[in-house]
Image 1 (cartoon, chains in turn green, brown):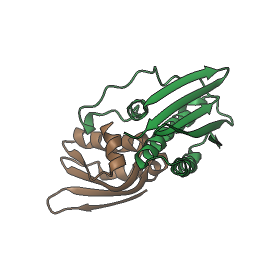
Image 2 (image 1 turned 45 degrees about the vertical axis):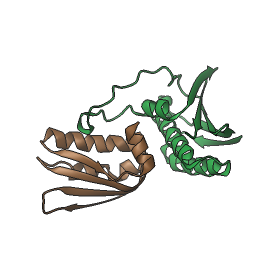
Image 3 (image 1 turned 90 degrees about the vertical axis):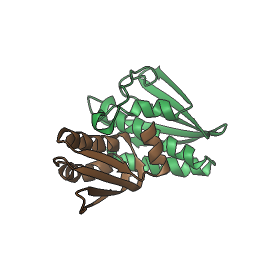
Image 4 (image 1 turned 135 degrees about the vertical axis):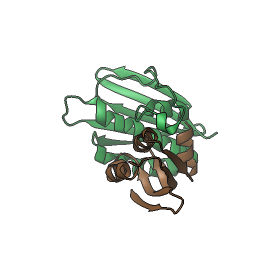
Length: 135
Length: 91
């Protein structure tokens, strides 16, 4: 298990991505798995920074990576407000680029790209676990 | 994130993006991209062949430009996405 803590700041998105790609590659994940894990981690992390801490303050987001059969397991933990992405409503898919919404696609990406997604809240902490497997 | 553009003789505006279209990349190009897509009845082709990462916030920038164009009688086409970017768009 590889674990790193990041500040809940948009400036941490790229360092987090770089670390994630290095770790996933080092544990032998296929390129497509690395891409999917990076994209989903970015979506979750960016949304946490934007929405999870309405009162502001200094918070940490913990990202964990482990090898899983055929891929990787990504776990993201935070102490922000409760939000369960496994049950949140999805936006309607757009018919064309110019009729699309300009936001809300993170959930669609998580549910499309992850083979498994689990959420739990324990005390004041959220834990989201995603599994990505090579197809 | 880098942005360049050219106006072709057939009236099409070709916008080339290069780099990561994530939150930071969107911030870098949003204003310029919005300005370049505020056109009446024109076609804008966005060349994504050198975009190696597209997050939903980056897609939001593209969608905003497409909606502006559409509202003014034009259209936006996305061209040449890399495999991972195409997968994100298809999702």
